[in-house]
Image (cartoon, rainbow over all chains, first blue to last red; front, side, top):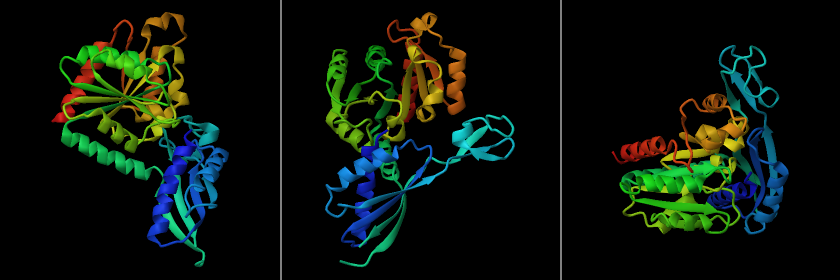
Length: 114
Length: 222
């Protein structure tokens, strides 16, 4: 994946919010990451530790990750099911007429500042 | 030091890039410049197909190519031999291009007189699919030796592409590659995808591909 690239995106957005709110320092950053987003959390944390050192306002900021489970919806029988367990085919009726409802999120939820 | 407080952000990390990509697409429309983002795994035949495409369309369209690679400029040299304008973009270790990098590349390419700019993205089926480059259309090449199950393994890549070229069809007899199954796998991810079997080496299917591209460039300029 491209953990380092997205860390730069996150830092750019967080810095902007922190500056707009006249914060001195960013202490925590909470991300919501979908289960099938394809981000490796450990790698993301490693890149994070390295990248925040380059920004005085971000230095030492803690990264908090909240995972959002992946859920797929079946259009034929109307049931929802766990994406990671059953993928494209609905375990209730066997239909392939399904779509992902949630699980590909990659959001900055909130930041803690002083 | 001030008190600790929580600021709600609720913002998609890709939203910034998506906005910059939309803005780039608008500028391209105004300039009547069509940008094709070409993606594939390493070795699927992007550069060979590009040289074929330039041979076929170079007489009627002014074409420029941006070759994105982590390092080296072997691809740009190959393209420059066709007579098309070519520049090399080095991503410096990054696995993909985003809208800002693409916009910078277009500046370097000096697109003023061009009809068609082609971005040869980094060879990779995962990361480039996540980042909208601002291109008018996305194309990808899947080569026969990679297998007909690739759309199952890299669903996002297949779902963001407007056209999928199945390259190296000349070696079909030597591989367990089921063309019907592959079509079905692609269409399950992306019912709108245009699928064109080609062979960049022999030229098979290149007319159909060039026809599709010619039509898209025309529609973009209208």
